[in-house]
Image (cartoon, rainbow, N blue to C red; front, top):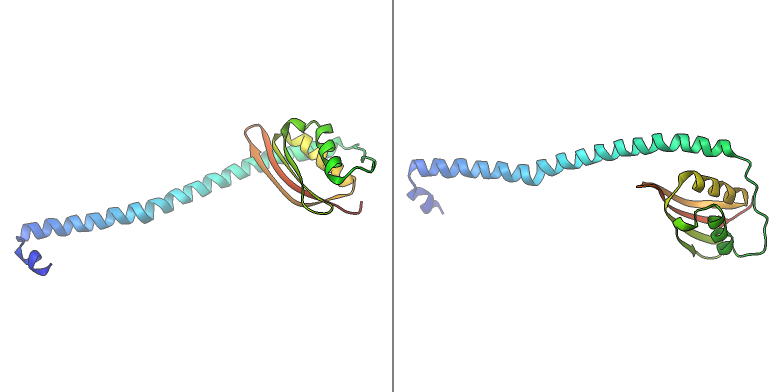
Length: 157
């Protein structure tokens, strides 16, 4: 390599040296700097999106809370799975129901897709008033409504 370099004229060596430096700078930009900037911009956009979702949810939660007057369903001897499934359908969310799955004794998982947030909040309040406990809850804003994953378990009222 040294011999090859020594055989080059001074002008060629300068061009190769400048070209090598430019290549290193371009690679550093393409492999390090640009992905970092893109990641930062994506995170900023995500924060703005989440702030917008929060601003959208706050009035919806207040409205759902002011509606009140929801009576707790009477225990009718049906399984938790059947009660939750029927409750989702009675709340007008049946067409948004993706799955109701048992998660062991006294536990059930519910997934809704593009559900109306107000209806979901009212349904959830009914479940809590009926004595169910929320073990896990994930609500994501969707194109029209919210996507929900929730795990409920039987508990004391």
